[in-house]
Length: 155
Image 1 (cartoon, rainbow, N blue to C red):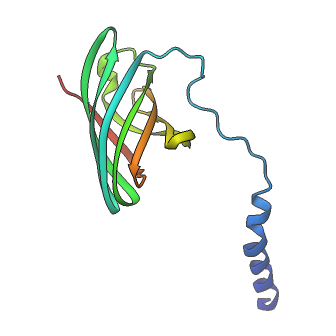
Image 2 (cartoon, rainbow, N blue to C red; image 1 turned 180 degrees about the vertical axis):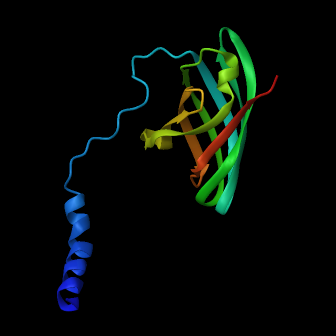
């Protein structure tokens, strides 16, 4: 039995990734349609410091119903090393009440790197609010933990 099992496992280990790369699975659809009008816009700046597990922080402005609202962002990063500064701009969707903007945001779709080092990322909170952010990183990238980041309004 052992003489048959080892070659089978070795074959699966060596050739499995080659076959997996041949699949043409389309990327998952973004959580918001491209033609959906945003409910607001955001700009934010921040940074992250990490050596395996780190901390992310920042602040920003939400433009919603013709007024500006300051907010803070903080959270834990994982699988990260080094320091990163970031700036981001984006759109906010599914925002029916200002109080729904605050909360814990997690990645709603994988980030996509665009030309010039810009990354498009979707974040979603427990109220269903979605932020589509376009960020530019300086230094090494950071990855959000499963807990994501916490956004708090500064009023």
